[in-house]
Length: 277
Image (cartoon, rainbow, N blue to C red; front, side, top):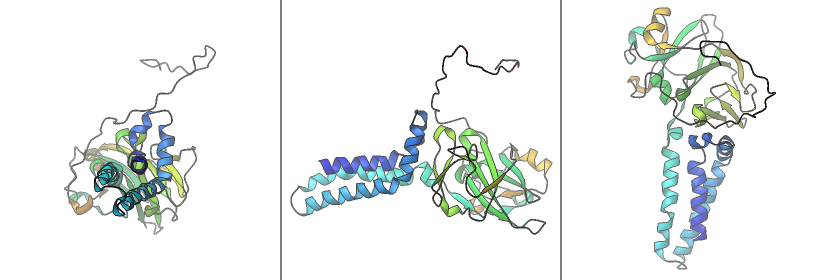
């Protein structure tokens, strides 16, 4: 019973430790960070306890029906490898097509637009919903090789893009979760977490491999196309239109409540607008 309990607890930490819903609690983000750092340790411990249980059954010290207790472990592992974060991926050197060949995006579909290396690019919301991180290399019209990293947080309706160094590799970037609606990345090579909403580390600094930000815009494809008729459009995998949302979506995850000290001498900034802030 103890072995099964320990195996289940370790599998629960592995399966639900990076669940975005932890972000609604005061120290939820810290828990997600720890769960990602030690995910393979918790997985290994769960497997070890499972093997120990199976050994007891195989040696005849316990009856076969004790193996039923390992079913929750199997379900937790299945959840971990079939959840949203497990399905999200990083695109490297994606395929772009001209406006004439972009039949997979409608004029009413929203896109993230930017100009990189003297070329305009449009990234459909529906494609970014499935692959929220894009790393591309472009030689451009000036024949200079440059790298771009685009990060998309769909539930925060926020896109950030940066010029990147050659040391930043897509296989080193892991999409962890979306706590507080922000896509959270982990640079496995540097052991560094990146908040895609701010484009910064969790400590507020510039991540390793990032150079400088690139301005992004969000608008319907028809509007972007009118401004940049020669734009390049990100093609979805397989060239088929994605069924993911193609317009802005409402926030999904709750945010942690922050307590403001009730200090009568605390200085604030009052912005005189139609509704004072």
